[in-house]
Length: 192
Image 1 (cartoon, rainbow, N blue to C red):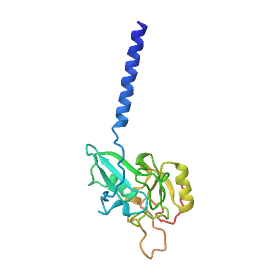
Image 2: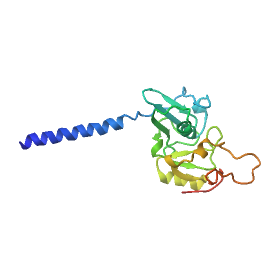
Image 3: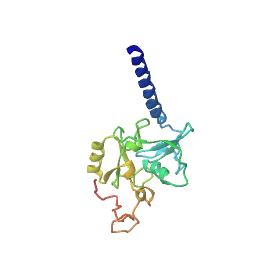
């Protein structure tokens, strides 16, 4: 009787474990960045731009939608006209990037787990403000110490920062302010 009970318990735990693994497996793995990757919004080769990149994989579509910046990948998730059936959002892991100019072809991180540096002095590949992703908070903090900005999680990246103009107007002497009243200047040194 004990043997039958042990077998039943083992079978139940294996089934529960399989359910957990199946849930994890639902998120498709990232694609490696290649020369064929064209940016969704710029229509240009993603490799031609410096800084972190992004890719989004939709449900039941076995290919990546590429972005020349991590910021553009985040914008995709905020724009009402874009598809909502997102299976995975990956951004370059700048904790593992060889350099800003060459952020790497295979060092991707789930955007929902990344530490993003926003409002820094470092510009993305298209010359706009960037949301710079890191897998390690200590690396994000070190980036802030060098380039300014502040560290936020995926759910705390302000929509205005991502969808705003990306740069202060020429000739502005004052720091622009977002509708939420937060400073929106590249040179601001905010950390939170």
